[in-house]
Length: 117
Ligand code: HEC
View 1 (cartoon, protein in one colour):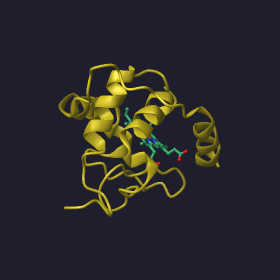
View 2 (cartoon, helix red, strand yellow; view 1 turned 120 degrees about the horizontal axis):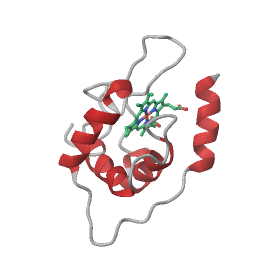
View 3 (cartoon, protein in one colour; view 1 turned 135 degrees about the horizontal axis):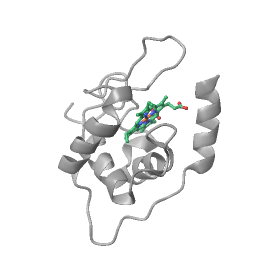
């Protein structure tokens, strides 16, 4: 139920972030932010947490993750979603650059249907 409500809210607030002019995603910085702000819920290796049976923290990479064709695998979509909604309950806490850096790090990881993985 909580996940359903959150999903609905999430869909309503996803907006497109323009790439900061002249600045690319810094995946190395994204890895640092991931460990500090995201790994608690999504796992140190992006594997997610499924133990409770009712409140899942979805995998962000690896075999249980969204696949390489999902919208979330596109950095612009990922950055906009994360900036608006993550960490869960603290949407807007990250800067746009931090959201892009996270996109560079997470979308670079192996996931289903990604060539070479
Ligand atoms: C307090 C736990 C928590 C933290 C911390 C957290 N998340 Fe999440 N995240 C969730 C939950 C729960 C969902 C699923 C929401 C839903 O389905 O409604 C989610 C969903 C996501 C999704 C969508 C995944 C998919 O398959 O569609 C992405 C991407 C994501 N989080 C990225 C991040 C990033 C990046 C961070 C760090 C900045 C972060 N999250 C921090 C709990 C968390």
